[in-house]
Amino acid sequence: MTEPPGGTGGSRARRAPGEEEAVGSWFELVAPRTLVDRSPRIRLPLSLGDEVFVAAGDSVQPGLLLAERLRHAHLEEHGRRGQPFGHEKQITVAGHEWFITGGQRHPLESPATGIVRSVDPTAGLAIDVSGNALHGVLAVGGPSRGRLEIATGADGELRPAAVDVGRAGTILVVGSRVAAETLTRARAMGVRGVIVGALSGKDQRDFEASERRQRASVHHLASFAVLVLDGVLRRPISSPVMKLLETLEGSEVAIVGDPPALLFQDPKGRIPEAPPGWVRARSGPMAGREGHWLGPAGQRRFGAAMHLEAGFVRFGEGAPTPVPLADLERLV
Figure (cartoon, rainbow, N blue to C red):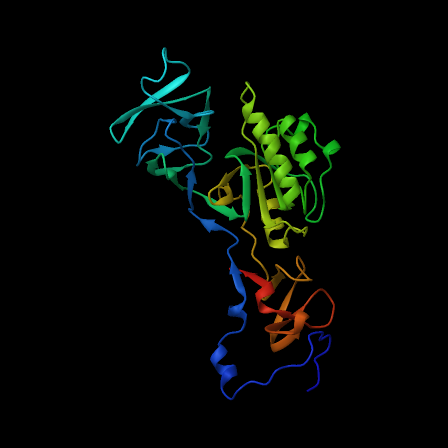
């Protein structure tokens, strides 16, 4: 059988009679990804030593004090020591009285407008947000609020020297990747958060270690969060997501960790949509590239002699290329 132009996937496997019809709509087999989630439910973590100031059913606004978190909380059995010290809360477990003690308390503020649905020290504080969410795959730190600012292009990288006090109070879009040194400097300069396409495992560990040292210090710093949109491998921010972020530039947004997302109100302009047939390679050797879906390619042989269902995608002005369906995503 003749290979289609641009084919790189080896021979095409034969199909049994009627198998083509059983597959249904091929484009729908491409993994869907929601660009904007309406009215999401978020959870903010709590612990037994925290003092909560809201209840289920309460309306909240950005910046409203929800709770005071107890730093360095630990349990001490009643009667094991003399005079109380630090911030305390007494609980009874299995007939034994315990003190929850710790250091200073720091505030937990509402990241967005919404309604409190539940308050539970073990499950956290659940809020139904009156707004929208752009989901990522990972959030470190937070929750945090700030004014959205585009610092680099979709495939750019922000260097530490480019961050100064003039960006204080902002949440920066920093392109395809960011180093731990840039995150540490951004926090020190008063930046409230960073949105990035990818964050390597090493940079994540280095930044989390820096965060632990900051939390162990005496002085409380403003919250800071990092939202990772795709994963650990460097790739550009997808064009529909970048257009959405450009639409939101200058508006107040928030980053939360459960689920990892950017929260925002309806922008002044229309929320961008992906062109019909738009697909993006989310994994594999073409990860990060965007193209147009042309149709099914059947089973194709790829690396390690694996036969996978594939589709033809045109990347830019190039010839149609077979790509495994499992490597693709589409926006809904």
